[in-house]
Figure 1: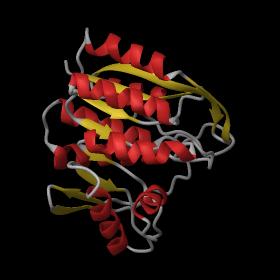
Figure 2 (figure 1 turned 45 degrees about the vertical axis):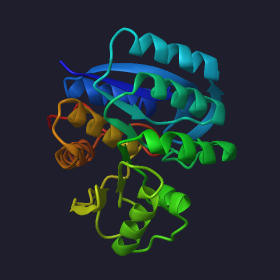
Figure 3 (figure 1 turned 60 degrees about the vertical axis):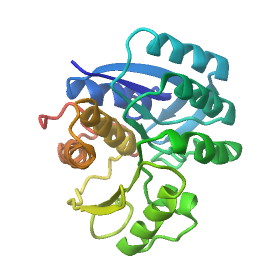
Length: 260
């Protein structure tokens, strides 16, 4: 069995964050571990409170993981403070983790802000260079690249600009565009379009967390970047198609759908 680590915030409603990551990793038959960066009070209707861990405690959790059960892949999600980002970067330089997938979580599906203003610069300067893949959605890609995204060509331009900040790949997710749900993977100078159907399901809470965790699972098993991304997208599509309908707002996916 391969092992994967999620570094993210906790979602008490179970649809996103650490809870979504652990579900995804478990369904993919990967041993899941977690470093919790923050507790959030959130549900399908929004984010109502954030209680951050201290940078020192995040560092202590990382030490406990990497000195005992070394992960084969790492997913990074919500890291809302510059101090936490700095602590993660320092530990990564020490432990040199493999297969790092970074989901630059800036806003929740329900619209709540999850990344403080001072953390954005630290994220780009300290963690982006340590990632093998960065997975922004369109609003995040617009913030990171400064490019308004209205069509697929804009997605590619943003991916290339973001890629200039680090040595790994960039996956810009096209779910926020109307019409299609195609993603573009810019990997080692190659442009790879990953086409996907648009599932008529408004319950998309935690899709970004789920996708990045599924990619990490594929990388943990040594399946390569393109296949890991394609397999993860297929998993998320099936989890959406399952049609789970919980909560009064933007509901979660069916992580346990029969699609692995």
